[in-house]
Image 1 (cartoon, rainbow, N blue to C red):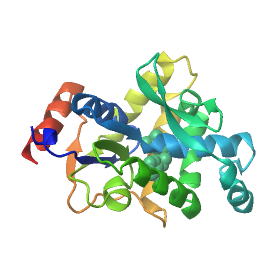
Image 2 (image 1 turned 120 degrees about the vertical axis):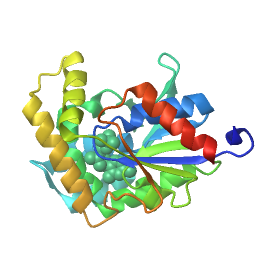
Image 3 (image 1 turned 90 degrees about the horizontal axis):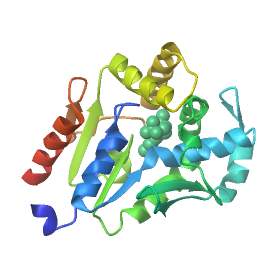
Image 4 (image 1 turned 60 degrees about the vertical axis):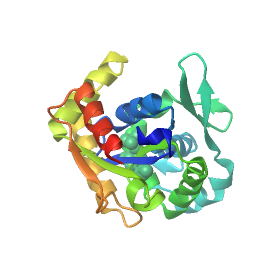
Length: 230
Ligand code: DC
């Protein structure tokens, strides 16, 4: 495969909860590439803001957020127990906590702040410097790596996405209703697509992958097929 010759940048963008990170992680594993879940970075900043009452009832205290930005250190650290890179916020592993529904419900307004995006995008550029990276998010193919070698835009029927996310959270013991998950998914899509800074958009040269009716194996085979065409 051509990746043996040349290290690629693979950008996977798309709607909330359509399994981007799971697929991106597996692709990176197969290719022996770095995997970066950029959404985890935005979630870690949102968690900091929730803990410090910088966001309350979905309203961001912008002056305090900007004053606190230099105190927010977000990075990935290898976890030998799981064999995955976990997201850290300052001195703490927050890989589990950032998945709480409360964080999902507050992350979009934080991700809409230009200064937050600027900070995280510069960290993402740094991570992609030596290529050999699969990064998933909302603006990877449009803003972070506009010259990525392969751009995929993932989507799926909102009902299918909500059901998958609901099953996942219930399996973890979170008490949630299907309706609140569905509402959160639809609202996040709308918020992410309509924000002024780096809105969620399909890059002109991205290929759409609608996985509503696809198994994980079929999605991986589909992507590897594209990778082998490069
Ligand atoms: O991928 P995710 O659902 O974990 O992302 C959480 C939120 O972060 C999502 O609602 C939008 C935002 N996000 C973003 O604005 N840009 C990215 N590159 C990744 C995520």
